[in-house]
Amino acid sequence: MKDLIETLADDLQPAPPRRPVLTVLAPMAAAALIPLGIVVFVFGLRTDMESAVMLPHFWIKFGVMALIAALAAPALLHLSRPGGKPGNGLLAAGLLAAALVLAGLVNLVLTSDGARIDALLGHSWSSCLWKVGLLSAPLFVASVIGLRRMAPTRPRAAGLAAGLVAGGGAAAIYSLGCAETSLTFLASWYLLAVLVVAGTGALLGPRLLRW
Amino acid sequence: MPDQETRFAVLMALGQQGDASAYRELLVALQGRLSAYFSRRLAADAASVDDLVQETLMAVHVKRATYDPGLAFSGWLYGIARYKLIDHYRRLKVRRTEPLDEARFAADLADDAEAAGARMDLEELLGRLPEKQARAIRLTRIDGLSTREAAAALGTSESSIKVSVHRGLKTASASLDDSGKTDP
View 1 (tube, chains in turn blue, yellow):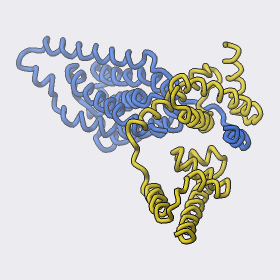
View 2 (cartoon, each protein chain N blue to C red):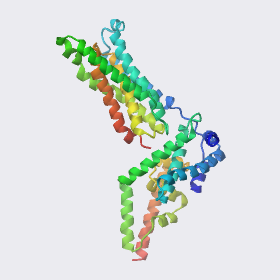
View 3 (cartoon, each protein chain N blue to C red):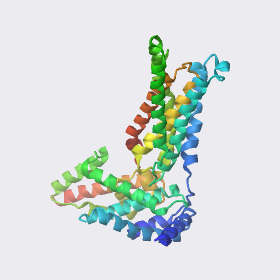
View 4 (tube, chains in turn red, purple):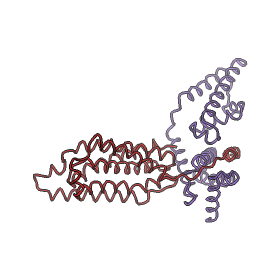
């Protein structure tokens, strides 16, 4: 043991404190250019963008998804360090999701009988799922690379938080090209896509974040 | 206790700046803390306590940049210790599959030892190797560190670790062959 301590101390190199904002979040922000590019150049922005930005549903979709990511981000930062606890961020993101589901249900009830199926399925429910999943991949990969440079000691929770940030961010970016207007659609397919990404993160966390 | 906390935080902050004597003082103090922590949880298993203290000190070293001097040091330290403890429990439950060359080396070792009729102790074998090679093998093959972690722990490059392990294993298996021939 003395040997080990001597060995470790003898060739000590300076190691300035590593900030999780720069190590984990900054790479995710940089990686967000990839899904953004895919939406703009491959999927296409919504064609009625100029009028859409005047409508609340455009901003609700973008805002709620971005808020999920923003609420989970502090938890991700805390969890990237040894002994870090998630704090209230994950709980807050969960409450927001629950509130969204409630709003979606209320909206569904208020919708007239004939229009319910449309409100729920819209025109793009299946592509919403896989596209948000695809768009979240670069963000999630960036978060894993960042987390591995840190030292998460609760890898499952860290993976979950990374998935929420990546999924929420990807869904917000996806919304720029999505013409769905119903709150029910947001509460079902968007949210499901984010939860799938978050669940994948929790599932892969212990494997990907071992150190 | 709060004084101790501040002292550790200051020593680690100095260590992060490259102050080796502050860092040595910190590691020596942590060794006692960690021994107590693991002993309390693994009372019957003294060998594992030593291993875990060593592993945790190594992890403290490799991940020292993730400590923020503004945060409580003990939260950071025991976060790592707990992680290593959980890892230890998991290893007890699930025998991790060994990498191929390690399995082959272990098999060679067993076969040759049987053929030679000599029960060659692994430690004894490592004792015959140059210190650097023995240490590289111990870290990567016995303690289960990755090449990169071992390189960081010993303050050398990854390629030098690989070379040391390779040469060490070669020498070790050659010496086993020899003992097989001389002592049929």
